Length: 387
Image 1 (spheres, rainbow, N blue to C red):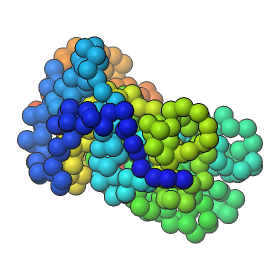
Image 2: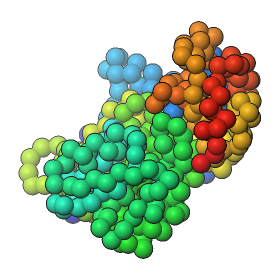
Image 3: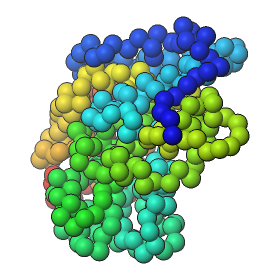
């Protein structure tokens, strides 16, 4: 196998690639979180990044520009390929892994499906109760696997010699609970099990131990603030090599533009062999969002998001927590009341879920608290202790 990615038919168009993609600073010029918020233009108070992240202005404009180029017949494949390359490198910077150990695709379930397909018959997969189904369904749909589900708080203790893989979200989508990743990784190592970490609700605000898990998958449209249609799979070279390239197409080729016709099979020699053909406009929009996160830095984003979440919790009479997602029981109709006043949150698992990211301000938090006065049920103070 050979390495690298050629763009043969577009080499003469390299100079037309968007400066926003081509000329990103290495390393990026630092930016503080408060200044970064000026890059967003929500109509009201947006507390719903756990559903989808708002794009920074540059990301929004880059995607629209790509679509305008398509309508005008000016979109080049070279521009799309460069966006994928840049996004792969920027994601690697966020999680601390080299680009050759990162695959790019459209969604989490595709990559999890590869992991499920790689497991031998009768393998045991340990998961957390109520985790997001894009992480669960590929294993449940694969005949011959044993899937054991336990409460998140007990998952590390449930790892034993029968477990082949632990598949868990770093942060729970429904309520924001953060997995005890150090304990889980230690338990898995002690029993020879691999770890697949779904970091979709984590990367972008929470530091994750990407270098200590076997596989990590992350959708790009939430805390990474990209358009829908971008996703990353990262892992150790050994774990990635064991995944079957059953979705392989031309974009998984060793030289992409020399892999579009005919046999023999000639896949990339690194994680790119698991790539799927990209929706180019989505990847063009993902790059500036990742650049913004790189400029602010995960540590600063974490401090910013957690401060807002704990301001919200304090306003509800709750103790501080460790998550940028806060879930509380509320009176029926509360989400609709908030929306009517342009405060956007979500209802998940029967509770109001609020998420706080770079697009959120202290004023947004206070506005939500004012509307929630008297609508959070008494059980919140008993049930919503930090976990």
